[in-house]
Image 1: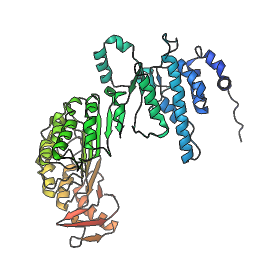
Image 2: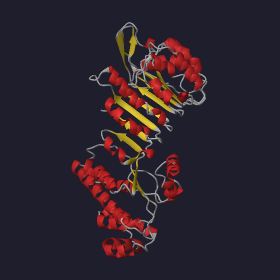
Image 3: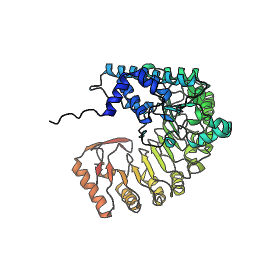
Image 4: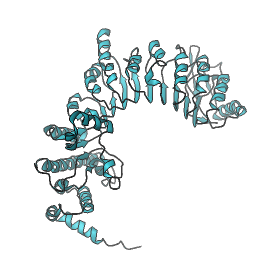
Length: 486
């Protein structure tokens, strides 16, 4: 067994400085940056919060990634409920110590010689802070937001930026450990000298803190579940101020059964009317949202910049919504289109065909899952699909498809050289068409699929998934593993 290496002189010096805090505090203005880094990490890992408070005013960098550093602390051997509560309490104490250290800085009319800190980042980022350049790490807001702020305030204010606190928030009134409650109270009391930036903003129930956050810097918003249409209408003015918003998630939001249709329409319009202000919006994800039926065409028409991603899951569309998909300029450069659980069985395939023609040069991902698409509808879009030369992923599962239509579809996708992942439903003829429930062995299904695919000389492996398939008025359920590769 090899003996443990003795500590280096540097390590011994660090241990002494941590033990003798007064010595380190007196010398903090003259200590090298590397020692300040090490002292901070030692104090953080050992719970010396008084020392943390003293080190913060001498922090020699523009940027302090506190969220990442807290996440790097030694994990407990076994994570029990008690240890989780203790860790939350420790994180709150660390936050209090660091904010107390910032108070020392903010209270000084003349900046100390070593004061460089301008961004306190509470996000759990994975950047290599110690090696990355200061300039790259201090982009708490996007360039668009910074330029816009300079245009409003002029160059002098831009040079005297307030201290920034950057955080990704899952905003809840009952956030564990009181971490956010303490942070927001501290920021609110110092709002004249602080700027709270938030890159990700999923909101559950706290509109009131919107006045604290710099909404120009919000890039991602997640609304729902448990939101009502009234909540959305109340939140709408704040959404309209998020001019640098890139991603919007709407999930499990429905109109109330207890309000008149006229009021429901008014509330929906209050929310939708903010979309013309979202000049940077690139991705929209909609899941189980009922109030947008008949309004989606308005949302897409209002957008001023092209979308990269449109995802609609388990949400109903009106015929007007469907018709306008191919007419909206905001979808003309679409890269990702996800339609899952959107009932299209009674819809004309023409809007989708026209849309695929328009985005043939940009579309890389196409999901048409559980949409009830019939063979006749699929046949109408196959020629347009064959022009989507950049397509890398195509998903056509949980739809009914015949062997003949599958063969036609595979001949089309075989010519798409960039396609890497193909997923299809198993043709209904492979199952017994005369029985409402047919149990087949995996080998039987695979053999049948091989007999279909092999003669086509398809250039890539394809994946098949069984599905719930509606034949006439009966639902037929098939037994099979999730995916079968061929």
